[in-house]
Image (cartoon, rainbow, N blue to C red):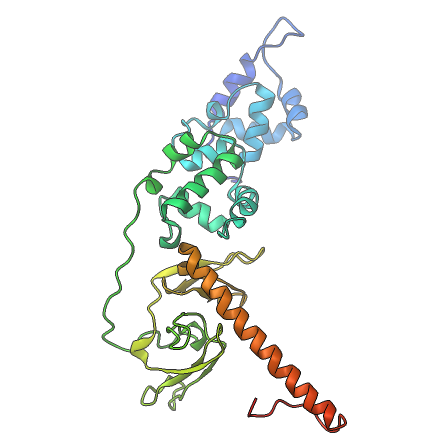
Length: 322
C-alpha cells in the first residue's frame, strides 16, 4: 500500500459523487473525469476509495483541489498536530525539509527529514530547544506550510515548554572506548575551546583498544596546538548534531559544549551546539581559527623564501623549527 498519510476513501467517494457541477444539472464527477483532473488513472482512484491504496500528501492535495474541498475533508482528521498541518499543505517530510532548509540555513540551523520527523513526534534536540531557535522553527514552518505562526505554535506543544538540558554525570569509567578517536572532544588549554581534533596520537593495546596508561595527544582544530588528555577529560556526547550537507543529513552524538563538530558520516565540519547557542562564542571561535590560519600562511611563506634563497634546489619541506 503506497502512502502513509491518513486518508478517508469513503469521504472521497461521497464528495466526488455530490460535488456541484455548474455545467450540468446532475452533481458529481465520474472516476474518469476526476482522474483527468488529478493526473492519475481510474484504477488508482478506485483503490483510494476502497481503501486498498493510500495516496501521498501531494496527491491528496491534488484530489482536494479537484473536488473543491479542504484536505482535512479527505484525511478524516482535524489539523491539530504538526503532521496534520504538513499533510494539509500537501507535503511529504522530504519536500517540507527541502523547503525549510534554506529558511533555517540563514540562521545556521540544520534541517532534515529526520529533524521534522522528530518535531512531529514531539521530540526536540537539546541544541534546538532555546527560545530563539524555537521561534525560528515556527517562522520557517509557518512559511512552508502557509499557516499563521499561531497555528504552528499550537501544533508544536513540545516546543512551547523549554526542555531541560541534560545534566553532565561524573565519569566513573573510561568514556567513549570503542568510538573513533576523532569523536574525542576535550577543551584545549590554549584557546579553551572544544572541537573535533585534527590529529590524534594515542597508544593502543594488543586488541586495538586505547591504552590509557599514558595520555593521548590531540591537536586542536582551531588553534593548532597539541595537548595531552586523559580519558576523564573527554567530554560526554550529551547532544546531537544533524549534518547540514545536502544528501547526508546524518546524526552524530556530540558534546553540548563543543563549538565545532564533525559529521561521522561524511566528515563535514560545522558549528557545534555551544557556538550555535552563543553568538559571542561563535565569533571568538572564528577569530581563533583566523589567527591560526594567518600564522600557518606566514610559516609557509617564510619556508618558501628560504627555499628560493637557496636556489630552489631539492624538495620544498617545512623544517621542524617552523
